[in-house]
Image (cartoon, rainbow, N blue to C red; front, side, top):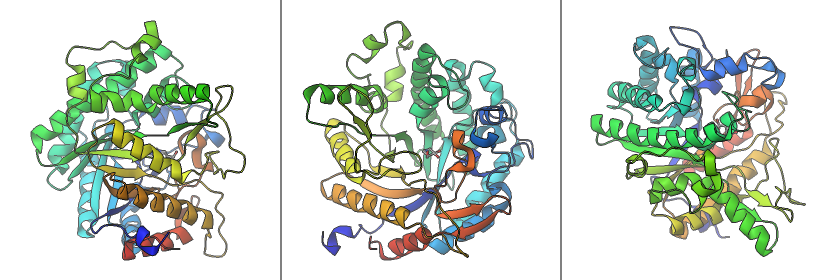
Length: 441
Ligand code: IFM
């Protein structure tokens, strides 16, 4: 590959991403209500080492310091989420103005540093009060979510130009309600299908609510997408791979961009199929300004239809295969299967066993991981896929859900007992990438 292949177009958005529950801490301060993640993490046995997000990176108190580090690295855009129960402690009704003020200050601080805020409304921390009303299985939540979106946009929409309704609805539905490894921790197939559907309709309703207040902002949704590939050329493995793609990624992409579920999908669910109301698909499939793609790994289907580890491949601390070329293949396929809006890679990164040596963290493997994904993206852009930006996951080491603090994804190391931050080698490397608008090692 020549150097030219690595140069990004002018205006390409270089970013970093986080999420409220994973970094903020301050779980019960200044009027914040409890979320399902507070409840879940306070339940013994749910999280590795019984870790909680009570303090996390203490970003609630340290955001100015963290934004100085963003600036030092040269990051142009910061993707973060709002905590719904910080703004509505009961999920609806009375607004907690202290919560809104906090996000107001954050947005002003970012803009003062010339960093573009990308705000996500829902990154998994549902107000517990709404879970007590049935959670996402209850259609009433769709209206409450739109009301929350409207309040947030009324306050911040004059300055925040990029809004995401949901982060990774597949995770919310499947890991929260089918496998039970995430909050609220249920194992119920019928509920899962209804939650997935309700999230999509909630996305549509909130999109309308946002646009009715601020018609000029950009509205999108973020999906976690993992291409499913067959281990060999075997016809049956390929069919199994296609079925798995339809049951995961296409389950969200088809309604959003085709206005229906993948062929046969509802029939396969039989009695567990969700209740769909007449206007739902029109709401779900309204035009979006962008699609956020979170990409970490691919899924490989083996001879028995099982998920297979690939001999010789590299795996991260999450047990995820490093597979940059699969990102390109997936984006090219999506580009031909759907009429897509512009794409942002809203998360990409890896968990490694980072060690502090003196004042340094030599995370060479993270540099290679990000490098190879960026190189793949640049190639994919040349094939006609409209990719506008890249957000590394994550700015900081943080609370990795059911894994607690045992997995480190950050470009900035966090020493949790002291809350000291150390820029890892990858942060210095990323800084150069941004300065030169070009990937080089
Ligand atoms: O930490 C998560 C994030 O909250 C959502 N996307 C995947 C990341 C790594 O697991």
